[in-house]
Length: 156
Image 1: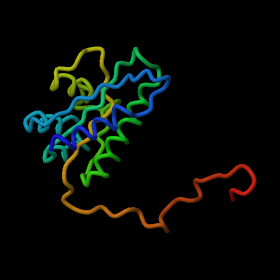
Image 2: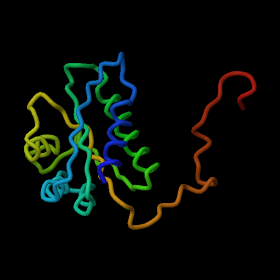
Image 3: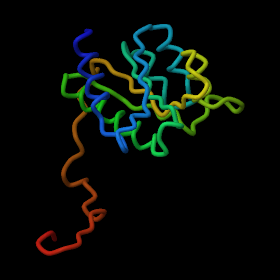
């Protein structure tokens, strides 16, 4: 569904970026063989990609901005929020600072699979598809309100 992909991309491209430097790069993957290979990016936590019809690989040129990690994280969550708004499910696969195997980082594995430029870094893969099950939000009583701290009048 090309229209949905375009709406998700638009949300990502509109994501805020420090000093509007936009260090991110987005690789849209619909090739089932490539997605299957991406599902093996890590020993644990990426296998669910295997059944996804779509993956957004969120990368960056770290020379463009010193806070590329934050900028890519913001873009990644906006991809997820836009997907949800369109009735799609999504899941974040953390790639940066994760291992594919004892000898190879997940990032280097993904760069090899997708033939990405050497100077790019890979933050995440967002797998997207129609959810097989409805995920219920956390119940209100499980919210950790003790982790919220107020300063100022009228806030407590």
